[in-house]
Length: 56
Image: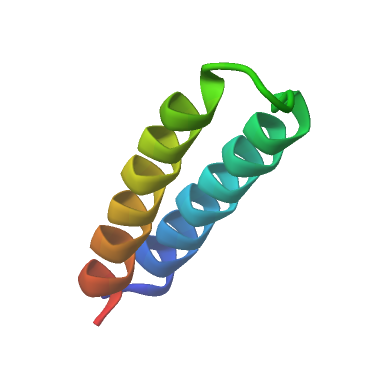
């Protein structure tokens, strides 16, 4: 993978982490949003796994 590709992959990972942080900051105790948040985190982690695999 080129340096440019690696930088792009790291940027995507950084944006994914920002989405997780925003979702966590909006989380409210006792709401039905818990499961939606978990699903979003699973999606972001899968995206990060894909980015890491592509960087190898």
